[in-house]
Length: 502
Ligand code: GLU
Image (cartoon, rainbow, N blue to C red; front, side):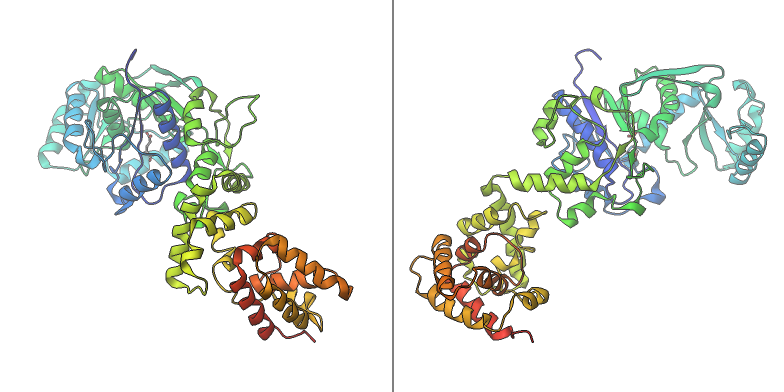
């Protein structure tokens, strides 16, 4: 393996959405490959045809690409080691299976489901670990079935599976990059089915063949596959192949340390995309689920490139990683806070244009969609939004007329003379040559001082009539950004629509 180009893979089954755990597996494979200047490959494992979901393969790859994980080889983009979909490689598996049969490392098994189940129950009752009882192992291979009986079944066309013959009395040992040395006794390993009765290989068989033929140097996958390793290693040995290096990633846990489940929150990456999380925050968040840079590092926000530069499998922990959505929300805010304004402008404009397709604005479109206007909104709102889309949705008053006024706030802030004060102040605003925050503030203060009123008697109502809500950025700056025409129109409309509460 010395000098070999690093090749890693993500091998999802196309059974639906992309699980956040799957995203982490894909990400770690990608980070490791890129760090080592190697290749990252996507292979689709669709050998369980009953669980296959139409369109899932494309969606998985597209979701990964959305997250910035673009494969060097995949079913969508091809490569030199294809096909990259297992159902298109059946001939390959059949050939290798024949080799194992010929070498007496595998055998036909005609046991029915009922028989297998009966055997299983019996073993459980006897306190044994359920395993296939090798009824169909031939005399030639150390079993008790006469070869003629097997021949007869085959000639009759009886349905069968093909099982691997796990050697007796051996121990299977390997070194996991994350877990260190791991050992299994062959007595605990079942004669795994390699070929199912429908002619499809099982996951175990297909993945070993493909991992070898596609020349992967490192297999990085979830902890749930650790117990499959001895079967895989035996297959490598049967074929005389050198196994790749392996790393099994820690489990993802709910806050209560139970295994991450749908019942306690979203687990599909698509759900987070729909909610408006950015790929940067999700990638950063998922990267930290099991990996850290090491003591001494205070860094919490990483770009993909920084992750590539710093990632190492040695710094992936063994202990389960708690999935904490608060951390994701915090990261999302950090990204918005720190992202250059010109980048955010480009993210927000399409969101606004989408919104404008279904909602009418009374403001001049060429202004509200301009770089300068969007940049102003971003500067006022970046500390206040949790998601990029909130620049348009949460702060919709920068683009659309308020369609209601916060009732509680109106009740609290409207006095008998509020509408009159607003009307008088409108005249002052109207006469302003320069509609700037400083000018508006100075004039407001000058207006209330002789009346012995506090600025608040106008500040709150002005915010409510112009934005519909009682909170937001600095009022004076908000009014400046909205512009004179919009501000005057909204005040007058507010006066018309808001009655002095009784
Ligand atoms: N198809 C398996 C899965 O869905 C892949 C396991 C592996 O990486 O070997 O997780």
